[in-house]
Length: 126
Image (cartoon, rainbow, N blue to C red; front, top):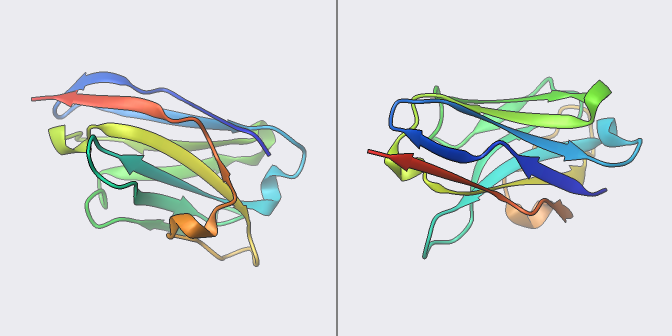
């Protein structure tokens, strides 16, 4: 599967952005999806994950209550709605995919993912 992330940009603190990740192929519904981010000079870290059917979601503590992950299997797309953005959310955001072992399995380790998008830059100004 090939992934294409989009929707990044420059936003003021307190603002919102919605990232999209479009996947190729006809088996998108078989994949569990995740979002990760990498700030300058730091390692890539987990942000959010969603199960194969969308019934289970999981978030990093740093974004819980502010970010929301969702998916539209008819459009082969996963979304990351980001609200109440902070300067510390500034990073390149990556989407990732892996075959979900079960319909409710989520994955928060980058090592669990087999496919990665190219990343989209999110910059939050103070």
